[in-house]
Image (tube, rainbow, N blue to C red; front, side, top):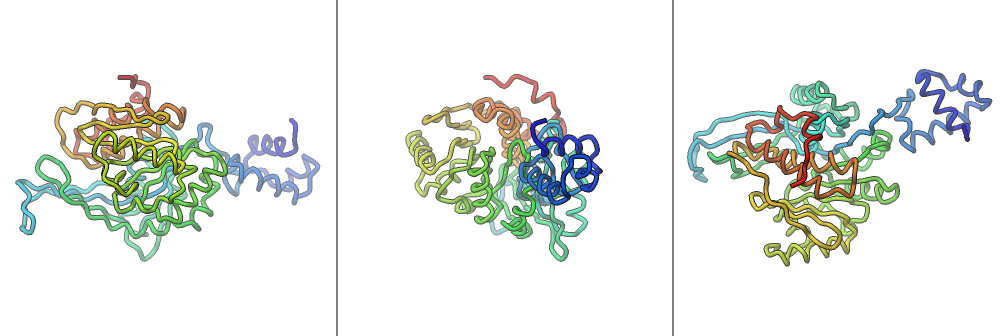
Length: 365
């Protein structure tokens, strides 16, 4: 091998429990020199922190953001504002980053979630459910004295959203300090995805890291008001997923005509964004390819049961393709559409029928 550092890594691979004293003796190095090589390997993402944790054979997709309970109240008749409306209620796991992570895990991909929950029964249930699916939740915060976040969606009889109410203050703990501490857990990621429940300081840090280290970074919008959390300089952000309303909020002008969309994309390119996807519901979507935007028709849906989670399924499909081919945005969008259409046809936030076979199926139109 061509360096002591590579020899040291080979010894750790052979025995992850080897001590620094033994490593030094076998390589003719002082303990301080061994510690220096270990620190370097951690920074490079080739070791994951102390105890010589080796990264998985396949690099994980890291999802950062919300993990909460979704409460869905669906009116049994036309919604009358200011009145009491008969409804039925369901409660499911939710949160954009959490939902994306579950979708990816069901697709058979290695996933790590970085989120925050309260030190309560709801938070434990959420994390236990993800662990059973194979999601790495070891880096999630469990905060005493705080309640796990919640999102309440009021739906009309057809499953379309009338109103959404989010109490996500626990996510504020995912600040820049937390991200710096969790850097070793993100260093070896195939792709990092974050939702805009993160604060502006955390978003800026992720973009700075991605810009400096050349790592693929994907952002998922969550609402028009939170678009202000993206900085003016978008260099470092590979891909941004949002809807037309969120795009209008980001660029500060109405976006209605095809010319409006194209102009908005030009403005975001000038700010440093590399790829853009704009979802438009039944009208399909627009995705960027170089300076142009291309349209994709919506995937067919037999009957919409519930819109909640469809956007997160779409984001998971996009991430699943881009983590292996960052330039295949059209293919990524087609897979995302198929997963979104599947989710629209179930009451579940994440469709339980998802499996690795969905990645093997052709996505060309």
